[in-house]
Amino acid sequence: MRDPQIRWHIFTDSVKLAEAVTKSIVEQSEHAIRERDAFLMVLAGGSTPAAIYRLLSRNDCNWEKWHIYFGDERCLPLGTVDRNDSMARDLWLDHVEIPTEQIHPIPAELGPQAGSEAYAEILAGVGDFDLTLLGMGEDGHTASLFPGNPTGAGPQSPDALGVRDAPKPPPQRISLSANRLARSRNVKVLITGAGKREAVMRLRAGDDIPIRAVCPPGGLDLLLDQAAAPSVPGETG
Ligand code: 6PG
Image (tube, protein in one colour):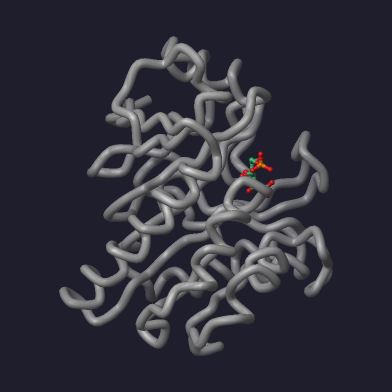
């Protein structure tokens, strides 16, 4: 497996991390809009990005140029509180003027097979993303790419994968493949909390955990608070 170039950014705490990441996202959006008149962003699920989504909702950005995609989704009915798109809408997307047709939820309510095929069709017409946000689980998973399952790292991999046996409930999910997640000008992996320490140490030790399958041309920016990375050298973010 190719190895991603990894840059480590360590922050004192999760609040400082969220503030710095939000500032970086806004700056990246302004650059992308100047260069290409659009900003394409993939959202992470889970709880880590919540603080960033709240902070983004308080910014006055050129929202009509933003295009939102999702890195993964749980196969639950639309509007279910545990869906990743529900959290993003509640904290951010419902409070800013991104055109509805530019927000692309994963149709995970269709189930792993039909939903992944439908999202792959949507993505077929989409070029490289400007920014992909990812989280990392305590077992080293990212999006819904779990240990022991295919990560879709190969260049011919489908853009979206159906997952049926996720160890993190619910078991049925849809995930962008590692290859598609990596087709992005910048990939930021958000890692906070002592619960992630073991996965961080495994990553540093070179273990073959799913996040390592995401190999964007520009490398991975890992953004961690000290609770997740007590002994990791690296530039302080
Ligand atoms: C999901 C997420 C998942 C998440 C990690 C970290 O659907 O659960 O996509 O990959 O990012 O499990 O979750 P936390 O941010 O809650 O620690």
